[in-house]
Amino acid sequence: MSDSDYDPLKPIYGPFFGVMGCAAAMIFSSLGAAYGTAKSGTGISSMAVMRPELIMKSIIPVVMAGIIAIYGLVVAALIANGITPGGKHGGYSLFKGALHMGAGLSVGLAGMAAGYAIGLVGDAGVRGTAQQPRLFVGMILILIFAEVLGLYGLIVALVLTTKSG
Image 1 (tube, rainbow, N blue to C red):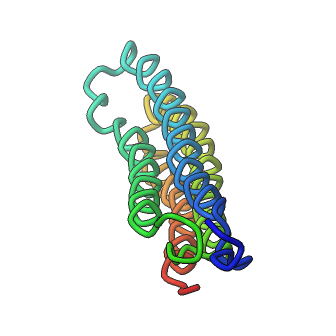
Image 2 (cartoon, rainbow, N blue to C red; image 1 turned 135 degrees about the horizontal axis):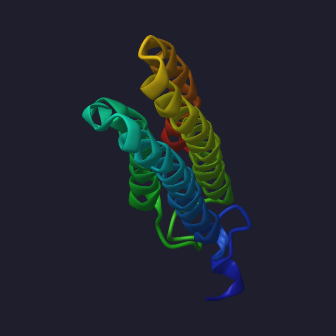
């Protein structure tokens, strides 16, 4: 590559930020989903000893935690699809790399927070529902609000990945 081919707005290291955004989307959202699944799963296991007939009803927090990882997967796929080699002829600008990094961190960290919230609410909620079945609707509402935190991160990530730069 000669000096005439160098474009400071499209450096050779620009795709690094896109790849890191892709990785952040998957890693952090999967960590949140795994924590939510594990924490809710321990609550389900404890509850199943007392009320085994409620196992299928109590699986909802685990399903909701799994959806968080799907948010990260969608954004990671969108980012990976938009990554091109850097350099003047590659067309991947530093701006695009920063957008992709921000999108990955947005969905990843929001997913991690949502997974943490789902895990805590799911654990306490299924244990409480085993003792008082009227708590079920309240648990579902709180789980929905926890899930929406991850959805907010997904929305911001989708907006960032559709920007052109």
